[in-house]
Length: 146
Image 1 (cartoon, rainbow, N blue to C red):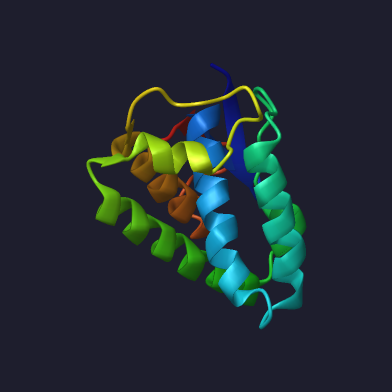
Image 2: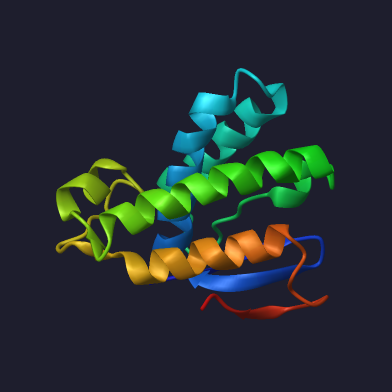
């Protein structure tokens, strides 16, 4: 099981690949609804979906510096999308049913979950992602999502 570092503006956090993949898959789903209103979001959505489903062992990236370019309006959009994803995860709590999470296709063709997926680690990833977007991590932060 690989680990990936999600970063933005010189800070970031570590998560297991499956956490990043499921988070980015759900973020891409939420972005689907808003992409028409924000042209830049279409490219971000497509990239997040690819990052979630390609099976990049140890190299999953949200590419936030590229997609947000430090623009406060873009950060605000992704924060809103992130809050929606967090709510979806809370609604599924304590676990995402395995048939549902396997339908996402995260991790590449060979990856499947053999049990329901606990929402705890996914919520930790999401909370860290929101903190990262808000600039709440100190420079050069490189801890694990909690």
